[in-house]
Length: 224
Image (cartoon, rainbow, N blue to C red; front, side):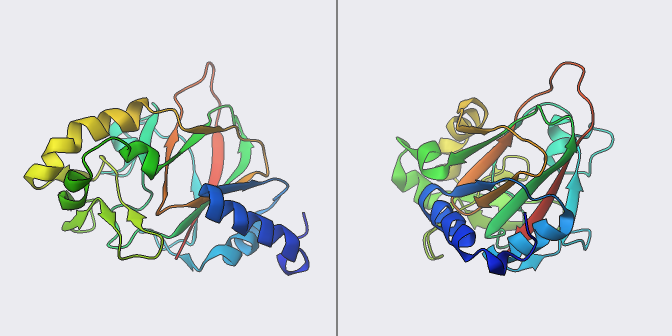
């Protein structure tokens, strides 16, 4: 795929429509880090993660290798439950892109619309629930949903969020169960594939280990 996406306005427009309609989009043939950065820049402004990098290379880590308070520290090489990326930021990133680089790509990623996760729960408890967020960068209070943001903002990550009031405690157990049991839509990776995710609307999860698993390498870019 040509790295000058300005020469492919129809592709960018198609991906933008998919992102708006479905909450995610997938594109193949992004064969380099430079192409990934150019593609991502059409969906927001890249922002540095806590290490100061605009692009992070991701591998499956053991408990011992993981950064404290991360999902890898909690779950190791096991599956990750559904969560909002950068939920521990005061304002989570707006869009997330992931690119499959190389290696053993049999582990899948699953995506789930937050509205599906919350369906059937008492909306009054959802709106009133208050959570304490602490991902190692300082603790603060936050709501599960913030309707004041354009399109709405869903923030959920049981790795860094704990209920802080009665409304949150009333739905915490059910929400935690749902993040682990709901199936969502499965994304099967192949080298050069990029997943573009509306991080305010969609949650994502990682599947569990596969037999005789080798190294898997993904790239991640956060966008505001």
